[in-house]
Amino acid sequence: MPDADDPRAWIHGDESAKAMLARVLTERSFVLLPPLHRLPLRAGNVVEIAGPSPSAKSQVLLQAAVHCILPREWRGLRFGGLERMVIYFDLDCRFDVLRLSQILKHRIQEVLGSTNNFGHGVQEGSHEYDDKVASMYSFDDELLLACMRRFLYIRCYDSYEFIAALKAIMALNCMCMITMHSRAQTESEALGVGIQFLMIDSIGAFYWIDRASQPSPYGNCMRNIMSFQNLVETIVQEMHKFLEVQPLLVLASKACIFFAGSSTTDVQRTPTTWSSEDRNQWRTSNKEIEKLLYREYMPSAWQAFVTHRIHLQVSDKCTYDRKNGTLPIYMSEWVQPPLNVKDQFAVGDGGIFLIT
Image (cartoon, rainbow, N blue to C red; front, side, top):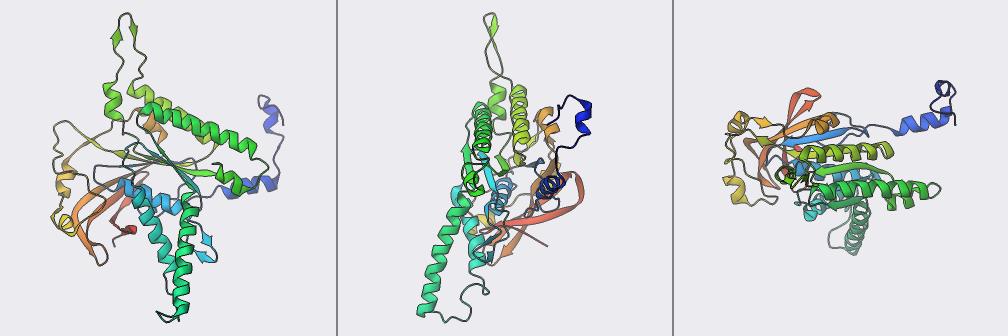
């Protein structure tokens, strides 16, 4: 390979047309499920999902994760997933594995239980019907296990653990790429090679802790405590290194912080599971939320790192679904790049669905 410092090295090609086409054609954009469906996203993009609590930010991440780990096809049935590995950093320490399993099982059963694939022309109660039911549940468990193997979960309790986890994942990924160069793709995926998505919930989880841990003088020296800005800059640097080694699509949620003097008493976190009484009593005034001003608290290093930004908020309207009952309506709007369209969606047992 020619010396990269020599300007003439750029003239002499060291890549065949076949290798170039194979590289370019594999770098295709991802089309995710609503509300992230408006823009094609590629590996290397960093999407910030911002909004107050509650605005279904974690639900958007979970639905995107399920769509990523589902296969495109499985034994002749089309599930429409991306069949990619996901790293999920839980910085909020509120990850609900039962909710992830619920959405995943709903997507699987939606395909298996369709009239085109199951029970068509078979009388209920017959031996043939019972055999199909048994095979469906066995099929369900096997597919669920295969999907969960593509989901890598990491919980961090402070910014230092987050930085250490990023370093460890990058080192492991580099080591696996070297050792698995000549092995099968399935074996490389088992060791974490081929990861395409990195999800963070949420990037500002340690904001108040890190602000309270500012460096303070101790005698004639300073304590070895990094400021919040230095911590975020280090996180961004580690993620830059990771993206250079393994191109990823980054999805990060971020809770909004209100300006001093704004009232947030009416804005409360929506529980994951809703009872019918809670759904009828729960209301949040959208007009009051719009009056509140949000303050950007992430340092400029993170703001420059973000390539796409979508804002979520809850409205004062509700929708009724026969399966889920009364559900609050959420709104999404792309801020970077700006799009002159707002989507309305709700969160049911099977995930997010648009309201038209």
